[in-house]
Image (cartoon, rainbow, N blue to C red; front, side, top):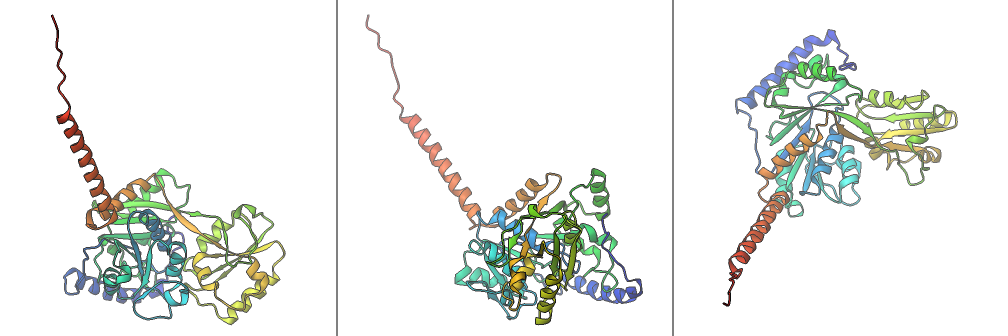
Length: 399
């Protein structure tokens, strides 16, 4: 059911009150314009959450990339959490996850030929660099990854993600719960997406969640579910294998360094109950001790075994030394995409494309529309000229 992964530490509620007081004061300073939020003439779409941990930001940003990349020049700007570099950094050839962070590296590896991927903790500065640096000056749209609390930027569209299993309306502030700010912060969202929904939700379930979220009329509510694509070899020497090849006899070592691995573990149990979870903290950097543990754990597992990890973890593991040949031969990453429920995908796409078109004077979308209008005007003008030049036919009769 919704909210089933929430755990409240009631003895920490007094600390949550103090934490919430500080967050409310900060938000009030922005609302009173004492702290300044900056708008941009270029379309800026922010995707984030108000909960610690994964609500599915990366799959949703990647959805926007796929929607826009053939229409406009897209740039993804992230903080680059736990990277080893400082300041503004634009991804390029031979970039590593240590330089830009695992999630930006994942997106650059998949879409880098068609988009820009940059990292900067100071988002306003990052947007300016994308707009005015010669290498990226043709940027049409900026997608802000995990920037819901970064209020120094005022995005054109603010998308708030809410994990179905950790609905914010049932959660508490840090440290008793997992909320980064009071649930009232959802009012800043233009779009709210309830993510990771079970595929078998009933109409009544959607109505219950809609009522619980209690959104304003100007806000749009969507529901998405996760779609697992076929697993991919992490290393070149990894043997060919598919999710369809999994049987109840298989033994899976599920290696994760993400905030919420529970959903992945539950879904893999549909294939086999022989699952050994090896979970680390979000964005964990694997140490030699961790690598030895992975090697030993996999070696101790019965045959007919594989390792499944996330794309984000694979981004960090790909350049790690010390993994045994057997581990490298049996390690796969599991790509995840999102799918809109209730046939809402077209409505979401139209909302995003309409915003980009209206706010991108120099975007490809606008240029295409202008070109189409000019072509249509030329056709109409030619047709009128032909009509005007058409000779008048007369009939002459001879008596």
